[in-house]
Image (cartoon, rainbow, N blue to C red; front, side, top):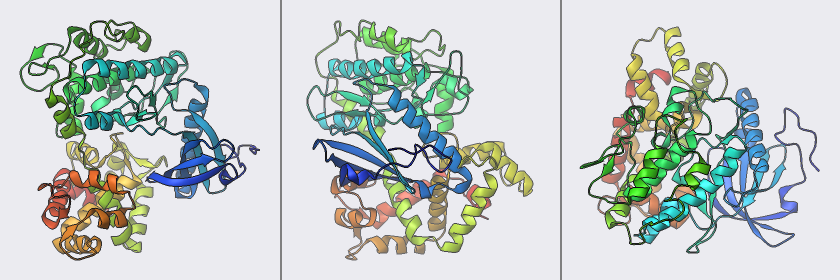
Length: 481
């Protein structure tokens, strides 16, 4: 019984979610809400519910967020395909939006690979074929996903030959004929060169498939570096399909794969989007059809490389989010929010390079030149979309504030060290972060240098020192005034 859509609603006021679904275990939480397991009271089937807290949207950018959510819902409703996550129900109240989707319990793509420890080129082929089948459905409707990466591929269950689903359509766009997108979207390692140029369509997804395929077969990305700027420069230079010693945008001599696999990757990682294989053409490639694809396991170094690649700074981000809530004073929070609103001239909820440049010009602050400004934004930009969100600004500011005095870091550490033994255990971090034990163990592994399953103060301190090395402190000082 949806009401008429108005500026105050995304889909319209509906009956309460709890009338039809019983909520269970929380799967995770984010800036705007959380995801939970739910049981359909009518059928007894389990589902996943993504809850968005509308009150967390600023009034100035509410229209932008509402339109983005409507777009995501519209796209998910328009596609019916076994390899696309299915939207089952949408519920909305005055304060919350609930997206009910099919539950995928098989885990993310790379997590599944890490668990297997070793896998074959044939297994990679079976996964990538499913991804291309899903993309063919999207692209036939002129829908560009725009953020294809391993995190956005989920297995339905733990079975050996489980279906894989493409998820997360928050950046996706339905395009008209001959329409091209302009804004930077995606995650650095997987972004196509035409996206960096600001003139792209659904073909950008096939470049991302080529990167995912490369990482699956070799364990590291074809374009890599210590900063987004270096990665983007490598992407602009293009892919070299030759076989060479060492690491770089080419096929490494020390890790072999079939000639057909190398040919397909080269055809996907071509800078000319018009020459790049479409999803339909990729499915017709001999490798995708499984012709002469090797069955023997890939070298064990592939999985070890992959483990090193996917171990990001999730732990530091989780800790910073917790400390932001517990250590930032109200007046500091209000002042930072005021600064954010001042810089965000177009009220879209994110801060661009141009908006920072304009703000610094208005304040006659010449502390940063053009290169420093762009690099500072790239380093604080955690999701790689070329802008800084409110959450990213909060985390970067908290890191700077804590790193300014080691006493603050020690106090923050002691706050979580409940038994005072000088170490953060799984149980202590569970209580602080509100995550389950398995998630906490994965987070600890990112900074646990002595591999004892706990985080001592030296490891905690080195985490913040690494963060401080990445972020331009004078830039953060400027925007925090």
